[in-house]
Image (cartoon, rainbow, N blue to C red; front, side, top):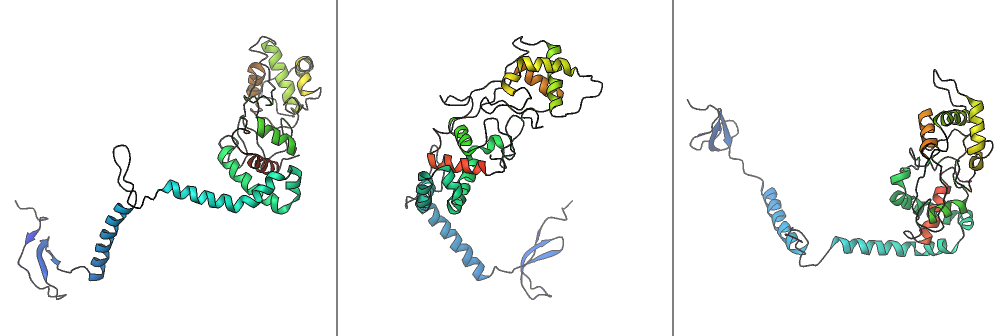
Length: 299
């Protein structure tokens, strides 16, 4: 049985409706008109073909086993980017020199220089800091929010610069060093003592007590005074010189729920921030310092 959808060949005829001759092909009773493409379209198509061949010859185009064709012009995208970067550096040179020569306070006092520093700092932050602190610097669990006014090691211009330059618990000799002891893992405190001091610490921030829990705040206060006050202070307000957080402000780097606080006391905390002094130049460090300080939480 013949396929009704298969094309059938007929002799060329002239379509009665359009007056155009047919190609002789028919599908399901529909005959194909012999309408040639416009000449301008054909010539454009041919020009594009010629242009593509010339492009293949002139520029890098075809992949090879371990390389690619370089083209007779010798143009490379990497070289073009290097030229553009050199032009950008030349445009920024004047402000970059001023930034390098100025102190942090002078930068913030000069509106034009401050605007340049913030723009450069924002770019540097996106390239180097955003993977941990987030593109908006809001941080996440274990990574500080740089938009608030809570700073483990201080939020002044000099303190922020010190932290960026040398890091925290990094390999830099001048890095901030301060560890939260693992009171449970090292056997300093027993489980009941850890739970009691966790409840007491949470009470300093007026955090709600979980249902069914009756905290022993008196015991917790005693444990805190004997083991925690040396770093966090008698009232739990922290100490920037030691990197000890303020336990009364409701801002918790590793979570404020009861289990998270117990985990922190049991196993300790020792977050690391790399030192950027060997990775970024002095001007970029200054710009990054000014930018971070201007996010809203600088002191």
